[in-house]
Image: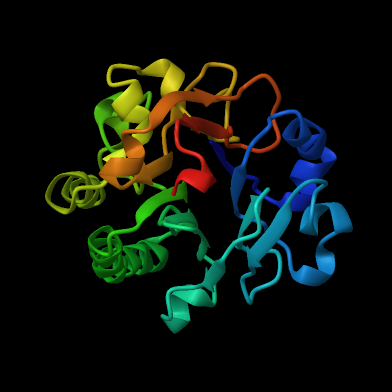
Length: 262
């Protein structure tokens, strides 16, 4: 099973940059997208349902903002839109599709880089999301959460770690939250499971400022985080950088499991 996670920084923009022709070549079973920046009325037929896929979406109430989506070759048995928390759900940040015993989530955690108010909201979302993450891993289902977590976990996950210790996305509290998720709670960072020592090649996001892309001054903030059983099925993880559909790069993971096995 091949699963792709991609922050599109605008689905219409990504479409104009060739995202859909690329997608058709990937032979992906499931594609999780973040930051749609669109409403249903803005979506073309291709965006709603690319050839060979079913499409599911959670749009933000605010126009041109946030939003997540999932494409799947197999029709989902059930789709859960949102967490049931009004202020988080209004921003279109959580979408879960269920296939047999497998749940696939497209997640877009907030960024706190625009100021103190948004950082406070980010911490609030993290605090309220943790009980859901604890519940998911106890439920007995296999789960993979794909998305932009807006946190670089370790020093190896960003270029300028020394200069970013006080910046959103690499704050001690944010990093400790992920450490708790991977440690006490038991979730698995699939990319790090397969590539424990990778540094410069692991980045998935580059600032549009300066020469960040050209100089590979990046961050790893896009993850596939899975329950241990499903994570153990991962056999390959790659980050696609040959074309740019966004300021993020798609993260592809291949798993030995098939939807029919679950």
